[in-house]
Length: 284
Picture 1: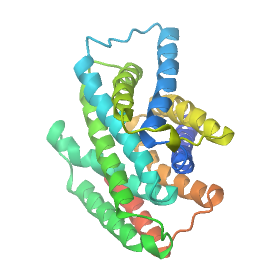
Picture 2: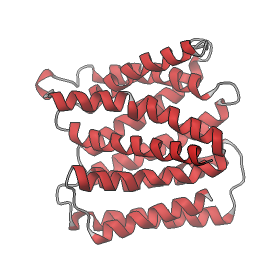
Picture 3: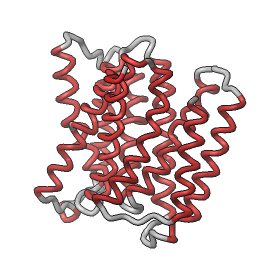
């Protein structure tokens, strides 16, 4: 059990690092190009893992499912995250992303037709209140933030919530590794197409550290975190694993303060805590 919990924590730490790298890379490479490079590298690793496990990728047989999941989870979620991180701090983005479980809960009754208990909706309400407080307190410490950046992160949460719920529906036919690899292929195509006419060489300012960040988000924050999370879920069970996703905003804030020297107002911090507590209550 302890090994499973350790794997879940490691996964959230690796995902938290993605926000830090995204914030650092914001001024150095266009968001759509970053997402394209990131997932192109990840595809190679995912397909290699599938080959080692003697799994086949039904890239054409299940193209409809992969297109939908790729657009939502690989293209929309990641690109919106990187766009948002160009405008707001990693700490701010991480606290807003605590609303991901709320987004999942909101889409569940409409798509999966599952009944959600009243206690869970209370958690949703608390999280939404937390996000509102977080927005109101943002400028007290982060004068360079923008409402557009906030909205981009909120939209990324909605994209991931929809991706997760649809993934649960399609999971009856596809295992997680196959589903992720297939979604990555089509999501990377969407991302590459979005670069046409929008990415210019003058906007690329890569350094050695920047390339190390790209390698990190392509390996540890993508494939590594995915493998750690799924291995942890397999050990402790999906129900017990769910609340651990709420550690993501905690690590993001910690890393943002320590590595990027970001500052957080007390009101924003209070809003972030409310958002996380609401998400935990909803998950439980």
